[in-house]
Amino acid sequence: MMTFSAYSYLTNYAIKQAFHHLGFPDYFRVELAIAKILGALVLLIPVKGQWKEWAYAGFAFTFISAFIAHSASGDPISNRIGPVVFMIVLLLSYFTYHKSKTEQQ
Image (tube, rainbow, N blue to C red; front, top):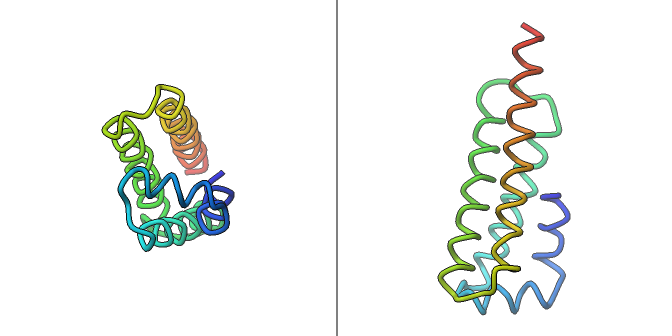
């Protein structure tokens, strides 16, 4: 999910226009794409320490910020619901990860 959106951030002209509509500069779109790719890699590969926690937190901040940006720019509810749905999916993934981590110990 995050790698696909990162790819879209870098290649899709409509996404570029959406970032401009929200008032963000081009470099922010590129930085966010790189952060999403790195975060997705951290969640997919086995890493030690708190790296996965940071990736989950970063994605949560991204979804919350997306909801706020779409709301502040006056976008319709159809544009605001996406970040909320993805936040729910992220929370399910987070709690599943912690449950499996606890069961392994």
